[in-house]
Length: 102
Ligand SMILES: C=C(O[C@@H]1C=C(C(=O)O)C=C[C@H]1O)C(=O)O
Image (cartoon, rainbow, N blue to C red; front, side):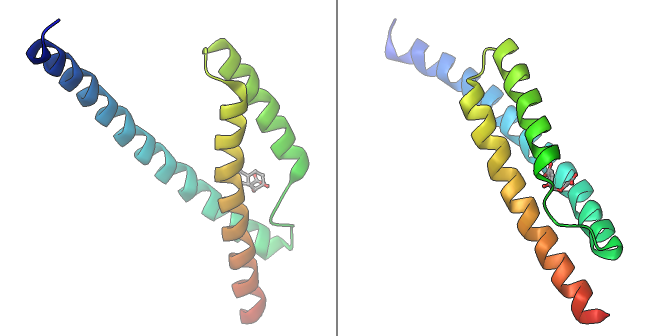
């Protein structure tokens, strides 16, 4: 294959990759909207920011889904754990603000 043809194909792949990246950003934004609400709810009710039992269930489920989607389950776990760590930090921050206000 010559370079010109290869560059055309590369461009098509990259257009699709850009669409997927945009979808990921929108999906993450929606997820964080929900988790921020959960953080406020937990702060008001005095619940802990983290719920390790729920996380274990989510990780087991996503590892399973990853396996059937031909995605590396270790990567799926790392990715979800990274997001959850960030969410828990947000929850701890929301709880701290709530405590200072009451
Ligand atoms: C969102 C929650 O809070 C935390 C964050 C989670 C998540 O981002 O999915 C899951 C469990 C909790 O550690 C929750 O309890 O549902």
